[in-house]
Image 1 (cartoon, rainbow, N blue to C red):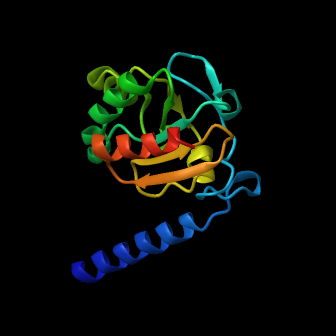
Image 2 (image 1 turned 60 degrees about the vertical axis):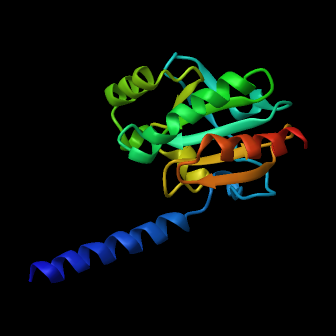
Image 3 (image 1 turned 180 degrees about the vertical axis):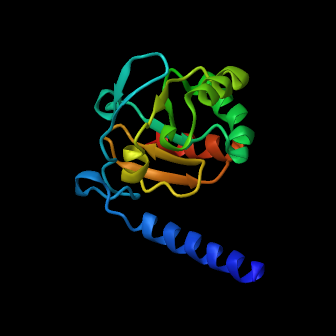
Length: 171
């Protein structure tokens, strides 16, 4: 009986994941390589509001994460290192899926990992939905004109990020 319930729960979770991934992106824009990045306006931990539009003219890296995510914890040092190396040429923002997180945990994560870039709060998961975020971390690379040029699903090593940023800067 317990085995059957476990299988049923697993099946429900998988169906939910598939259905969530099929939800339409906000404003009819699909977050995919070669498409315009969906617009966002999110408040950050520092109290400022950041919009996707303000980053036009400079390459943008958007990293979606949560404080409870172990791969996100593993990836954080690479993001800090990338920011330090490319901060004059590439914008980097971390979008916390706050709808699935606690603000106290977000603050603790940012403090523990020393995140020096804006940490945006997606309190209703609307931006995560627009970007079709299913696994976290997920990172989008956006060119100067706002076009999505690459996507990294799951935690990435510094060398992977660096290779993709080098290609992004050559666009």
